[in-house]
Image 1 (cartoon, rainbow, N blue to C red):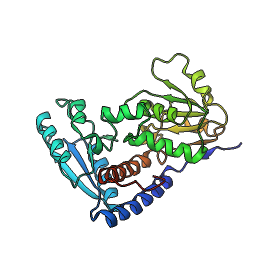
Image 2 (image 1 turned 90 degrees about the horizontal axis):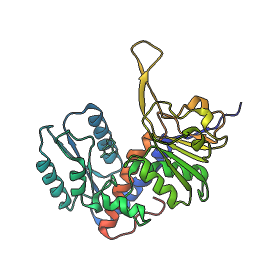
Image 3 (image 1 turned 90 degrees about the vertical axis):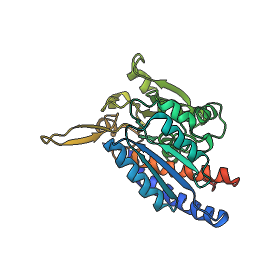
Image 4 (image 1 turned 30 degrees about the horizontal axis):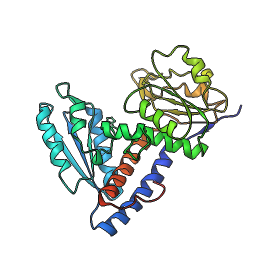
Amino acid sequence: MTIGKIIDGKAFAEGLRAEVARGVAGFLASQGRTPGLAVVLVGDDAASAVYVRNKGKMTVAVGMESLEFRRPSATTQEELIELVEELNGDPAVDGILVQLPLPDHIDDKAVIATIDPAKDVDGFHVVNAGRLAVGEQALVPCTPLGCLMLLKDELGDLSGLEAVVVGRSNIVGKPMAQLLLNENCTVTLAHSRTRDLASVVHRADIVVAAVGRPEMVKGEWIKPGATVIDVGINRVPAAEEGKTRLVGDVATAEAASHVRAITPVPGGVGPMTIAVLLRNTLVAACARAGIAAPQGL
Ligand code: GUN
């Protein structure tokens, strides 16, 4: 049995971080300061605290300044907006990331709308979403941009390929579809109401699964030779009593025999997100300084 290539997202992300680190050194040499990334964490969600710690470590590892703002879960929306406005006005801050989810009493949209689009390294502001939609230079959400990098590395020119994105979130599915369209793919954006998802997925040369449902995309749905990007990170019970394991949105073991390439979970898309966040921060810093971003980023 032939086995498709398992895409090593961890290695690719390491390479990207090394490139960002070189770019940061160049930025320091020309601007006399390091790019700064501000991360805002409200409340005490355990998973968010882990993400934020990892982000902080990797930000410092590429030579950037990491600024962390922790606020209690009782923080009001007005207080959070005030903090974002301060960061907008702080010349040492090039990127602002407000960790989601926010506590229920805070409206995510109102907070994101306050972030200066030039510092919106998550690419969540409607100005950046709109720029991406019309094909203008934009800060693009980290996870889909990371997926696109892996796809281009694997396939080169994506022009004319059939791409099916499963999942229509604002953070992954929709920007992923826009990015693939900008690469001249024929794009289908499928979702929970899509009829006969199996046959829709079977058309695809590129499948991006971002639905958050464990192993929902079956191996037999995938066309032989297709390239599969699995964005899902789902914790499920393991064979051993009381243990859990991580699986993606794709039944990888079933698909691996006939795909051209597939990302594993863990070790595929996951490591790309923070690497792209650092890339976006450097790109934002260069744009704010009025200099070109390093080529190839
Ligand atoms: N929570 C989980 N992932 C992310 C992310 O990429 N950005 C933000 N802002 N919050 C998140």
